[in-house]
Length: 100
Image (cartoon, rainbow, N blue to C red; front, side, top):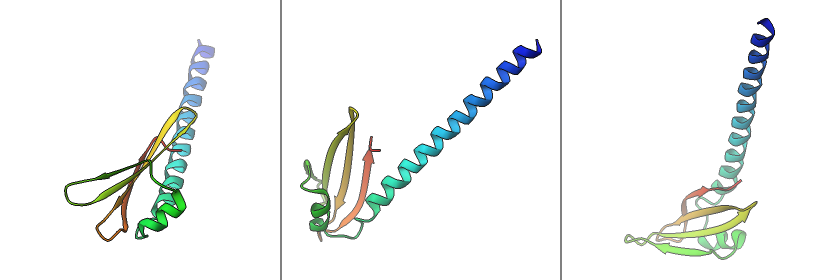
């Protein structure tokens, strides 16, 4: 009975520590991506295009704000980075999903 309890305790311990490791790695990936994207805030659209190349798609909303969308694929996972460009052609925001 004690061996069964000890075995269950060890399995639970490894499961919990494994989840913490995944959370830490995820947080590191998010931090790295945010740092990469934040450097474009306040930069001109031309500077963004020099660094990232031409976008895969451009969307304009009814207020005249444009969104430059960059798409890529890594390990069959689609990554999409979207940069918000204001009327002065400056990067004012970004979002991403699936990028690591």
